[in-house]
Image (cartoon, rainbow, N blue to C red; front, side, top):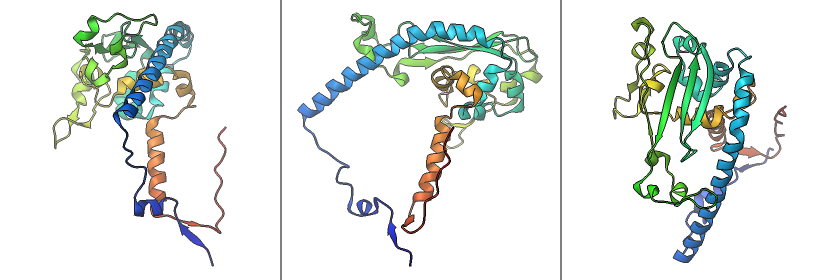
Length: 271
């Protein structure tokens, strides 16, 4: 007869997790905050130094990629979020004229950037460059700060994307109304609250609408751009893929009993 036992953690779920709420005093909280800021400061220094060293390498890569046709459309569409937002065939046809993507970092705060999409002559719009700017709007206190020897100011450690950054809109000069993809496929907001995104419509709404509903610009700048070659080759997944796998795994594990006599299947090794 097969011996079975409940999944690990089943007993904990019944009696409650003894570690779910740990009370600490002000002194301990102060120590945690102090070391959290020290770690953040070192991470920020390393991040700024990395950007300084990576920029000339990105410039060299930029020149090398000019000889590879369709590099950027292929790389971008390998990311799940981008592929979802460029869902229409017309979007993808327009993207086939994309020749280059560049990220310009703000000198005051490198976490803030402007995306530049360079297009060759195409039947859709006159613009050779479409930009998505994320404008850095630091607090008034930041203006009076003096950076330390490593170029770090107190406000840099308190940086908040939601508070300190405002995404901007860029008007696209469409050649013809029949090619105006943002009118053909406009954004639709959720009918219930009128604020959250219901349907992104055309990818090019990303430029013409100020708000970046799905943080697509952050994904392009911080995920696709630095690892563009890996995305082009299909060597890297993204968080959306991982989240879907985790959800499938969680659904399969709910209320599951482990058969102690049943051999477990082996996962194939990844190359």
